[in-house]
Image 1: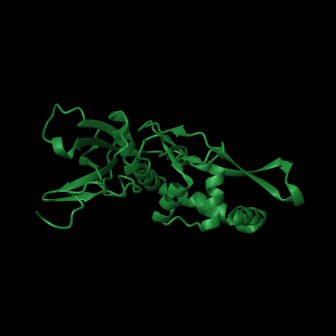
Image 2 (image 1 turned 60 degrees about the vertical axis):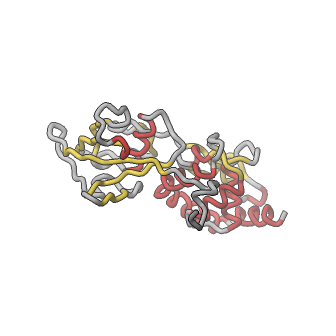
Image 3 (image 1 turned 90 degrees about the vertical axis):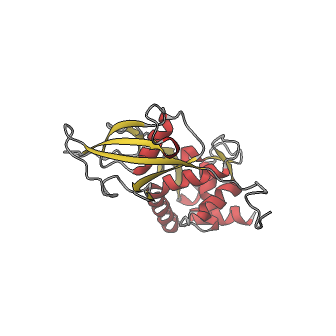
Length: 245
């Protein structure tokens, strides 16, 4: 197949290949939260796997810095058992490329392989992260999280408080909510309530970057945020109708 041959030729071009590896690795570090949210929409049966075509479509929607050959090569590397499916949940944990010195490919070209990085648990939020940010003097936030629909019901189990570092990302808070609720395939969004207006927080930013500086552990900043499910209806004839009855 032409695509397979093009991928092999691309791998053989060491400088181009290494440039791609560096580029996609950096992109994944900054966008894995967005990627998971989007891939979950393609994953209709909730098994955590995507076909190649679904993976390609998702990466294009995310404006991933890859051309057709690079996407194909990345998909092949992610599909370790060659069953035509990609585990996108593993993809979110990150990938690390390395050259195996004990294996030399034909033509003395370096052999490129993928290994999974072991995640470290953040000492504050307990989530598995690539490299938890270590702060010598962390700031703290007493976070009050409430589901938008039941925000005024104190006894609702989805409304809870948690002490958290101010330098954790909004995406980490979303994962904490997911963990608290037992996991969900629906997309969650966190909002800042500004009176009549609700502003969605960017998952890629830290709480400090969204304006919450935090305080010392004995006097944390008290912050109240709302979250809600984003349910999409793509196949409802009534909701997609362009006329009124």
